[in-house]
Image (spheres, rainbow, N blue to C red):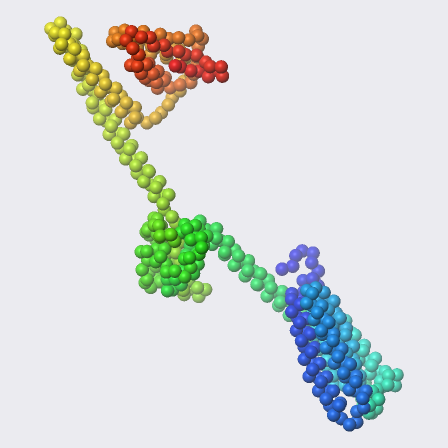
Length: 485
C-alpha cells in the first residue's frame, strides 16, 4: 500500500526485480541458443556464405553468453537490479540491430525481437523505460535500413546485394510495417506491464494483509487468558496456546499429538455435534497432577462451516474453588457466631439470677463459716461463667469500632478505682495510678479501651504476691506517643 507523498513510479515498481531479471537472463540464453544457433548452422551449411556471417554470428552469441554471465554475477551480489536491467536492455537493442543487419536489414525476419525487448524493458524497468526502448529500437531500425538502402552502410560481403537493396515501395512498406509493429508492441507492452505490476502489488498487499491477519490471530490466541486446545476429528491435539501450556505445565510441548483425553479424562469420543457443552470436570496436567477445570467443548469448524475437529477452552478453577471454600467456611463461622450469641444471652440471664440468689443467702446470718465459703466458691464460678459469656458475646458481635477523643488518665483512674476495692478485699493488694498530671488525649473506643485496661490490671493482680503493689502508669514517650503500662 502506498504512503502519502509517493510518486506513481514508486507505486508501480517491480515488486520482485531480482527474480524477474533471472528469468530475463535465462530467456536471453534460450533465444541465443535456439535462434542464433540455428541461423549459424544454416550459415555454415550454405556454400554461398563466406566467413563474415558465421564470424559475426559467433560474436553475437559470445556477447550474449558473456554478458549473461557478467550480469548473473552482478545479481548474485544482491544489489543494482535497476542498473543490470538498463544494461541488458541497451545491449540487447544493439545486438538485435546487429542480427537484423546480418539477416537482411529492413526486410529481416528478426525485427520482431525489438518488440520482445520492449516487453522485457516494460516488465523489468517500467512503462517509461518501455517507451525509451521503443524509441531506441525504432531509431536503430530506421537508420540501419536507410543507411543500407542508400549505400551508406555496406551489406555483409558474403550475402547477395539484392537482399539489402530494396525498391522504394518495398523499403517504405518494410519500414512502415515494422515501425508500426514496434510502436504497437510498445503500447501493448506498457499496458501489460502496468497491469502486471498493479496485479503484483495487489498480490503483495493481499499476502501482507493475510500475514497481518495471521499474526493478529496468533496474538489473540496467545493473549487469551483461558487455555485453548484444538484437536482433529480423531481427538489428537495439534494446537495449544500459551495459557494452556502454563496451566497444564507443558513447557516442552509434549501434548502435541496426544489424545484429548490425556487433558480431559472425562472426554469420550462421540459425534462432533454432541460436543458443544459447558461443564466442570477434573483436568490432568502434563506431569500427571489433577486440578479442577471449567471447560467448554465445541466443534472446530472450517471455512465452509464443516466440523474438522474439537476446540477445548478451559480454566483452572483451583483458586476459585479455594475462595469458594473459604467463603463457605466464613458463612459457617458466621452462623456459629450467631448461635453462640443467642446461647450466651440465654445463659447470662439465669447466671445473674443464680449469682444474686447465692449472694443473698451468703450474706444472711444463718450459715456457718464452711457454708459461706462454699457459697463464695459458687459465686466465683458464676462470675467466671459470666466472663466467658461476655467473651462469647464480643466474639459473635460484628466488630464496629467507634473512636472518640478521651483522656487516657481518666480511663485508667476509673479502672483502678474498681480494681482497687476488689483487690484490697481479696488479698490486700495496693493499686496505684502513676503519671504526670497532664491530659493525655487519645482517639479510642471507650468500651474496648476500658476492657483492655481492665484485662491488664486483672492479669497484674493475679500475678502479684499477697499484699503487693500494682502500679498503672500513663504518659507520653520521647516521640510524643501515648502509653499505658
